[in-house]
Image (spheres, rainbow, N blue to C red):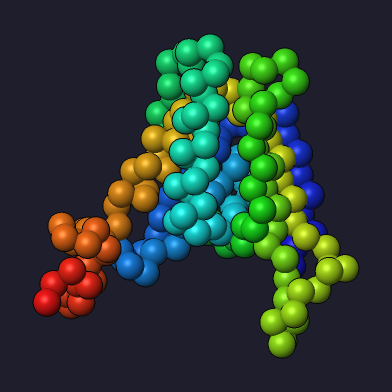
Length: 167
């Protein structure tokens, strides 16, 4: 459980990356505002979904200026929290993208939700260029995984895999 509560109208970096070997990677999202760096652990599917939505949202905004080169995630890699709910939208003026990230709901030893526990929160506004750079970086991180089977399109492990389409 995290007591992090941060809101930034401008960020210097908003990056995503994966650590580890394909099939055992850990995905991290980092946000930097001045000297403050916040790291959040997320699932591959969450990074993929954020990229997909942001790309669709960017179609409704003016074309992004030159896209900055995405900054790779950097140590320390200790996550403030594990990502749960994601909120994406537009700033009221429509010139920036709103990203709101909430910590996953904590559970007790029996797996029951702990509703009164504090949950981490991060809210940032990104320029269209920052959002597009995040999308490109996210797409690269997601694509860096295990190769896909040409028949079933499921990931192939290092030791092979049982393809449901093969008899």
